[in-house]
Amino acid sequence: MRFRCTTSRFLRDLAKLKQIADYESCDPTRLDDWLKELGAEFRQYTYQMLKSGVDRRVLRFLSDEHLQIDCGIFNGVHRMRILEVAKR
Image (cartoon, rainbow, N blue to C red):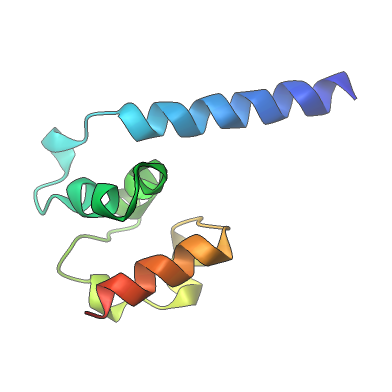
């Protein structure tokens, strides 16, 4: 049980760090700013999306599967919100 609690805490702390990180040097299309407009909690996905080759130019072409499998976004509501705003 202790291992599970420690793992959960680590993942929460990691998500918080991803939300406050500075991605300016590796984010020329300012994907992080776009995600921040959706809500501060969406910034946790910036690193993995950039690492997967996503930038603002390809957002409208993404699918739910891309976000889940390639970008590691497991929260279905967050994926739905990202896709909804990207299609506009």
